[in-house]
Structures are given as C-alpha cells and as structure tokens.
Amino acid sequence: MAKDEVILRFDKVSFEYGVNKPILDEVSFPLRRGSKITIMGQNGAGKSTLFALIVGTIKPEEGIINTQNGLSIATAKQVIAREDLALTVREFFEKCFKDKVYDIDPRIDDVLEVVNLKGHEKLHGRILKTFSGGQLARILLASALIQDPDLLLLDEPTNNLDKMGIEHLTKFLINYKKTVVVISHDAEFLNAFSDGVLYLDVYTQKVEQYVGNYKNVLRDITARVEKENMKNAQLEKEIQAKKDQANVFAHKGGQLRLVAKRMREKAEELEEEIVDVRREDKTIRNFTIPCQEDINGDIITITSFSTMNAKTGKISKRKANIKLKKNQHLLLQGPNGIGKSTLLEHLANGSAEGAKILDGIRVGYYRQDFSTLNFEHTVYESLAHAMHLGGLPLNEQNMRSVAASFLITGELINTKIGSLSEGQKGLVAFAGLVLQRPGLLILDEPTNHINFRHLPVIAKAISEYKGAVVMVSHVHEFVNQIRIDEILDLEK
Image (tube, rainbow, N blue to C red; front, side, top):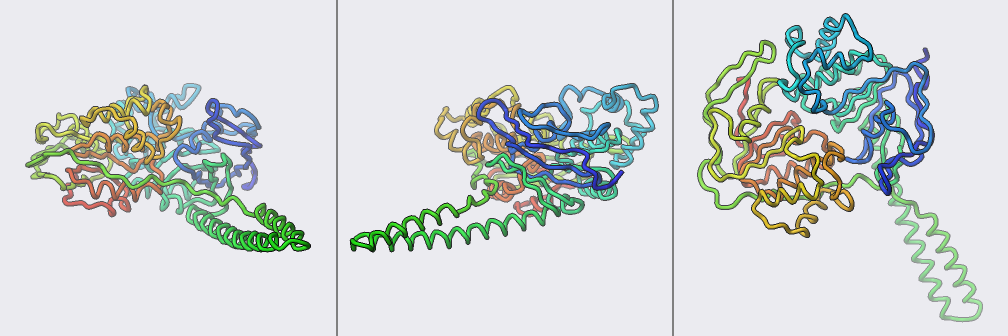
C-alpha cells in the first residue's frame, strides 16, 4: 500500500454539542498512511471530539467522514474509565477485542515490554486501581498497541509519565510505521516525531492544516499574525488619511465635494481589505491563591513514608525529617510506581503514617484525575462548594470574576463538571483552590491536560503562594519556574 495513500478524510464535517455550542464548522482534511500528526487547540476547542468522530462514537451533524475499507483504529485515552479500575490487567486488555483472544497473555507481555512497564510478567492478575498514575498511562497506551491498529490515536499520552517513560514512548513513535494522531501539550515530545499539525481554532470552529512539527507551526502562526497586523496598521493609516482629506474638501463646496465623496468611497474600499487577524488561544489571567490566615508553627511534619518497588511490589518504610512552615515548598521526586501519588493522597485525607498536618489547616488538594471534583455538579455548584470550604459566604459576583480569569464564562459555568474537557476540569480545580484559600497545597501533576500557554501563569501563582506546598510534577520546565525550598526523593 502506498505510504501517501489517504486512509481517512473529513469532508465538510460539522458538529455541535446542543444548541449554540458549535465545535466544528465544515471541516475538511485528509489523514495519510504513515503520517505522524499532532492536534493542537485551546482547552475545549474539540480535540477529543475529533477523536470521537474518527472512531465513530459520535456522528457529525453534517458532512461525511470517509474511512478506508477495513481500517482498524485504536485509541489510548487520557484516563481509564472509573468502572474499569476494578478490572485486572488481563480483563482490561480482553475488553480491547470483540472476540475472545486465546493467546492474550503473551500479547500482553509483548506490549507491556514496549511501554517499559517493569515486572510485566507478574501483573496480569493485578487490579488496575492499585497502579500509579504513570503506570496506568503506560497500560492505556499498551491497550491501544495490543490491537496493532492502522490508525493509532493518542490522547495526552505523556501525562503522568516520568522522563524515562516519555523517552521510551518517543522512540517507539519515531519507529512506528503506521499512522499516528496525537493530542498533547508537551512541545518537546511533539517536536521529536510530528510531520504535520491539525490546528483547531476555537473561534472559527475550523481546522487549519500545517506541514512540519509543533515548533514550525508556532513560528508560522506568529509570522502570519505579525504580517496581518502590519497590513492592517498600514490600511488604517491610509483610511484615516482619506477620511481627513474628505472632511477638508467637503467643507470647501463646489467640485471639491465630489472629490470628498470619492475619498470616502476609497476609504470604504480600503476598510473592506482589512483582514480578520487570526486570534490566538486566550491565556488565563494572572492569579493569586490566597493563604489561610492566622497560621503559626509547622503546617506539616513528615517523619516517615512508604515506597513500593514497581517490579516486585515490595513495600519499604523510610525515615524523613521534613517540616514545612508558611511559605515553604516541597517537591516529591521518584520514578512512576514508587508511591508519590499515594503519599499525596494519604497526606490529603489525613491517613499518612508518619505525617502530621497542623490542626485547623485547610488542605487544597489538586488530584491528577480530578476526583476531588463532583462530576455531577455544575461548575457553579463546584465553585460555590469551594467558597464554603474556604469559610466564605456565597458571593456570586466574586465567584464569577474568579471563574472568568480561568476562561470559565457564559454557559460554561452552568455546565456539569463531567461534560467538560480534561483541560477545563483542571482550570475549574485551580479556580476552586483560589476560592478555598488553603493553608496547605497538595498538587499531583498540576500540568496534566493544561494548555501550554497557561503553565507559566500557574507556575507563578504556585511559586508566590504564601502557604506550604507539597507537589509532584514530572515536567521539569514547569518545576524550574517554581520556588522549591526542599526536595524529597522517594527513590533515595
């Protein structure tokens, strides 16, 4: 089969979620065999919707999606469905196939080896919910690879992966011979293998096609915006000059009034030449996470913690001497599966042996799976609850102001949390922390699913936070922008 053969084509496809929520408007583009495509766009622009249309779980309102006969498609989603967390590894992989696969165990071993999940030969009967976020990310990827699809769809595949995991995935994708489409906000990862970009414009609901990697696209878009702005500035200058001349001639009467009329007509012609400058993704506004008042002493003390060997499953107890007062920030480090997220969870719910949080401290907990949010609540209800936790009376004006700074406006505030994109859930979680006014921030992979444009703003807010912080993040560029006072490496 020819490498440049079109295996899937969108032909004037439109889609909307209910009335007045357009996502795609007459979108057309091809996917070619063997291409490595990145999907870019603002949180909520419809990137995951595009995947759902490709696999057929939702249907377009208008237009046609043509797929090659016999085309096999597999998706590595962002998160494992909650109802699947009670399954064993073997049961989860069996669900990937319509028909029973009798040689499933060796096939599971092969794909777990590909995603570098150590000790895979002992994992088949283990329950999914016992794995770390990074290990689950590897299992999600493996569940798509085991199907050996013609078209591989990866939705935020680097979320929760440590440096070694990302390097392993990057090498695999570079060598992968079939078609890959990736949603990701990790620029370095995308630049390593992409040869084309589909850009979803949240304002026009169109898809723009670019050749080259993520870095090339940002350069092209920036150059285009600068060129359009320069052209418009020149046109506006000419328009104003014509209008000024028309005003002068109009007051002189006689034949000069005809000249003034021609000047106005020329100004109108020039106004029609002004182009709509391509609008870039909006960035959240700078924000501050207020610290709980009247805190004195050690906010959190850690004298011991437990780690797990990802290969053997053996639990080890280790000693520590960590004391965090106000304005002190701790970073937890260690490979996937060692127990970082487990430690954060136990700290947040007060069940961590060897750790003590000062009485009366409000804990603001950002979980990588957003399970601290009630998915049945609307955004309004969720933020109102955060204000209640922060000891504040309900102030709708203040709530909406905070929400707007995180791009939560209009009907979005009345939308159920479960209907939001993963990136929008993350922004709601940060808005909740602002309204909760915690004394201790516990942050588990706070960059997951978040648009790269927002990350410097979030890093600044965390760095300037006056309470205590305990954080886990594998994104070094993000961590480097935050003031870290102490590091606890769980592997050492």
